[in-house]
Amino acid sequence: MVVFKRLKTCFSFLFFLFASASTYANTYAGGIFSYTSAEYNVDGTSASEGKPWVLQAQVGHFFNDYFALEGRYGVSTGRSGGISIDSLASILAKGNLPITEQTAMYALFGGSTAKLDQQNVASSTESGMSFGLGAHYAFSRNSAVTIEYLSSLNTNKAKVGGVNLAFQYRF
View 1 (cartoon, rainbow, N blue to C red):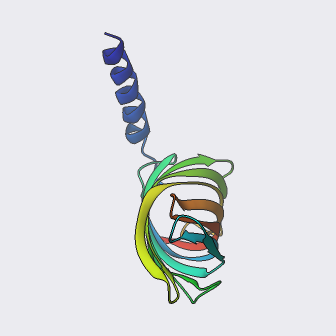
View 2: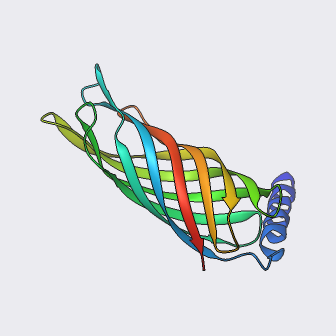
């Protein structure tokens, strides 16, 4: 009986989120420039650290003013500390809290997969949970800029996280 009540509450909340669609709910795409901190531990004893710059593309859809789903894919622009991020892909749920018509704060939660390469040592693909916080400023109805911190990956072998600056266009 308790499980049924919890499921009912959960479905009621999700119905409220999706049923309260706004005229501002739509699809967006953009580019992300990331100052990333990466740590790669090949053998379990010593970790290499680097700060590779990452360029990403993003596509997302706001179902209403409060909830969006987003996909991202990117690569590092080079090596730092011998580490490069050959690919970084993320699927994220975005909880959005509008502050004014132009500004919003948001939280991100989801999963990421990254292929990391340590020059002349090893490379591997790691997957894990992602989470972050950000702020959104709309220049107009169709263009915006965001700044956020996102911890993309945190496993025993690899840690990837950083500050992201994104430019978005809404369709």
